Length: 327
Ligand code: MRU
Image (cartoon, rainbow, N blue to C red; front, side, top):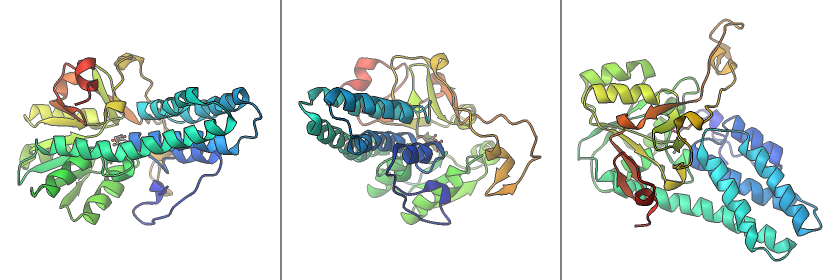
C-alpha cells in the first residue's frame, strides 16, 4: 500500500507481512479512509490465514477471529473496517478443509477490493447528475482514490462529472490536524488536472459567504439513521453550508451505512495529542498543553441535503429497505 503519511513529499509503497505491521499501518494512518481500511482489514484476515500454522479448521478459524479483533480495534469509528473483516470471517462458513479456508478468505478480501472500485464508479455516475457544468465544489479531508481502492467517493463524484465533460473546480479544505485535504486531495486532483484551490479550514465560512460555492461534497466513515460520521470539522462545514443555502452532499457506499446503531452508540476515536503539538516533526504548541483530539464528528441528518450511493441518491429520512435495495 501507499504510505499516506508521507504524501505528497514522498511516494513510498509499504508491504505488511504481519498482523502487527498491518495494525500499525491502519492506526498510524499509513492506510486511511473508510473504504481503504476496510479493504486492508479484509486482506489482513487473508494474511492471518497464510501465516497460521493451525492444524485444524477450528484452530485456524479461531486464529482468524483473533486477528480480526486486533484489526477492528485499531480504529473504532469507520464502520467499513469491522464490516469487511466480518464479511471475510463469515465467508469461512462455506469452508470444507484447512486449505479451503485460506482460499476463501483471500477470495473474499479480493472481492471486497474489486467491488469497492466498481461501486465508487457507480457512486460517481449517480452523484455527477447533481453537478452542473461550471460548478465550484467544496470538499473536506480526502475521499478520493487513496481513501478507497480506486476512483473515490466524494472525489469520485467530481471525477465522474469531469469525465462527462463538465467543468468542475474544487475547493479543498486543509483538514487539520493531519491535513489529508491539503496533502492528499490536492495531490489527487492535480494529478487528474482538475482545478483545485487549497484553503485552511478556518476560511471555509468566508469562502462560502463570499465566493461562488455550488455545493459541498464529503465522504463518510459511518452513516447512522440520524447522523453522518466523517472527519472532524465536517459538522462545521454542514452548518455553514446550510446557513448559506448551499447543498451539503455525502457520498458513500452502502457498506458505510449502519442501520443498527444511532449516533449516541458510536465511539468517536480520540487520537494522540502529539498530532496537535507537532506538525511534520516541528513543535507547534507547548509540550504539556492539554489537548482534545477527536478524529471524527457527527453531522445531524437534518443538515444533509442528499446521500449519494451506488444504489442511487437518497434524501433523509433514510429507509433501510430503500438504501439497501439493489437497483
Ligand atoms: O482519519 P481518516 O483520514 O481515515 O479519515 C478519513 C475521512 O474522514 C474520510 O472523509 C472518510 O473516510 C471517507 S473516505 C472515502
